Image (cartoon, rainbow, N blue to C red; front, side, top):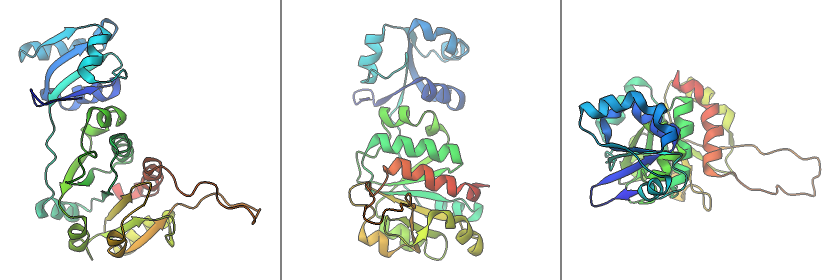
Length: 261
């Protein structure tokens, strides 16, 4: 939940807050918890006291008001509303130098999906996620923080004005993979294709209704698909055309995990 008056964001959920405390405790402006969470964060309280950061034991109902959700899991940390940095050539040059792959989201406008993709990215070692600047829904929110289960502390989220310009600028520098249910490249071929050309991957994920846009499709080096279950009954069609974008991301990143080594 965003507090516009204080320019703050509520981070809630035990794993999300635990990762915040471990990696970036200096971001915490205020800290609230239920009595049964006191021992989980007792080491943090001394740090907060030294910084004169308020921390209080409050009822669950108050935590719900602070976080805007019943899924707070007994702890809420208030941080400054995150500013998503704009992607620039210095950053992309760093990707190329370090052979770091990246994930580009094309009109994925659901905060929960963003959180789930961040979680998978952190799990499989992908550090870079790019979202279009004009997609307000796909921003760092309380919900995306919680669903990411601590992954927000381990990835970099950037914004761009134009997906097309990024794809064009990365032509010949990164292997640009678009996800498409009608793609002709099986997902398991990604590591081999990148290995052959010794380039990192730029993986584009589209929304669930329309997939990646035609403009994006035309600026990809390959269109990858996730093969569905084979059936011996040729009279039956595949009952589900595609996966949820976050589920698809997990499968794709699993296949691409060798690119992060």
